[in-house]
Image (cartoon, rainbow, N blue to C red; front, side):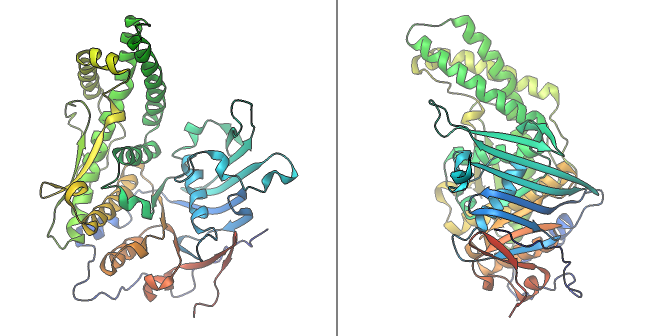
Length: 447
């Protein structure tokens, strides 16, 4: 099935929006308007074309994408979310929904041979065109009946998955994110990891190494629990764990400091100055402040200073030494980045425990918009904004606020079941596409 390409510019006369804002509407303040205005020196990143083969319900899709705002409308279960998932997967090599890559391959793909899926993106970065390709091949074994191999190519050259991440930066906002405040700590850790992996190659490497080291260390702790294993080997893994874990914690500390400063300003706008949001980093060990803060209006440096990371590593090692007996007794690693927390506070009150549903949603909206600006400042280029059915989850004032922010972004791709959540001025700026049974076509009749 082939969906025709789209390469038409926005209709003539569609300039910047003139939102119709009532007396009590929430709008970005002068400070936030400047923050979300395109920064000088920020590079252009635009997804120009996407090709999908056997990805979810897209048997075959070839689609050109214009700049600015692309709004995909369609009923449920037609492919809107799958389309955003494909873009996110091309950017991160991970799905925000699937627990295994095999779930991404169309279930009919194996009727004519080996089941596979192919995703290709043509991305414009600073005037250069880059081709990103991911191929998923089902290669089952007796031990792994659903094993799937992932092949990554950039401009036709085979690459590691770690080399793919960060080539096309995206910020994804979906209804599930509204549960970040009250959800489990693992969801907040995953959010931080997903954000930082796009920005920092060393963080990606440290996170991958930390995961492998943690697995080895836990295996050894279980052996020591059963009075097997070598204590000297545990000391070796302690040093490795502290080395990688220290960088992860330092980077999270700096990122949360930056997100906190940006989110506070946005949250003040969203609440009319009535509430002040604070994002608090709660590592599982006492982490020295590495003095690595980001102030509004200043670019975040790419890496925390080495002396600060070393101080965290030393504190981490000392905590592991103190907890050695307890960890052996329990057969597991009790301290480290895998036990980190991030909390949302307003007026000293933990929103995850005592905040209303409305307060929690406002905090997440502030966080995601802060993430958008953080990526712009640290990466020096505009991320692609992906929003999946988010407008229907927000009240009218916050929808207006978000539409104003989107209007200043270089490329935003949204999905919606009902277009009535959007103002006429916003719709006039957007390229409207209809999604139906894995096909995408342009909406020409806007009536």
